[in-house]
Length: 151
Image (cartoon, rainbow, N blue to C red; front, side, top):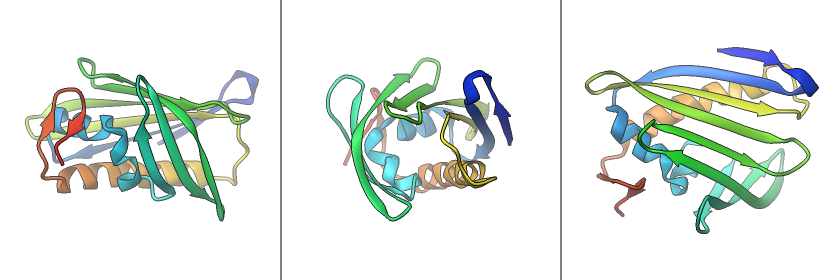
């Protein structure tokens, strides 16, 4: 867990956790944007729109917001990068590593210029990473190459 201020008043928040699921299954689950509402409690919808564009909807601080975000998936490197245009210059990356067969490590970093209450973003990040591991472990749907779970 860490928080670091960068040049231009950008703050980076990072958290690492481990999960009892193999790295390929975990990455496949996380790479499907339709799974975002399963581990980000504020997110109410996430639908791929073609290419790297994702339409997202969320309830944030009592307000419903909608917008377009981007999501880049590197399956070979088990790495995701994402972001959304706007005043907060919000973007992040996620890396999944195999620790042992059936056991993975998730590292997530978020970058934003948004002012937040002390600890608010870090706490939300830690909760989201824990929810990622829990949701992926509970997900018994097979993963297919390309990041899509069969429904």
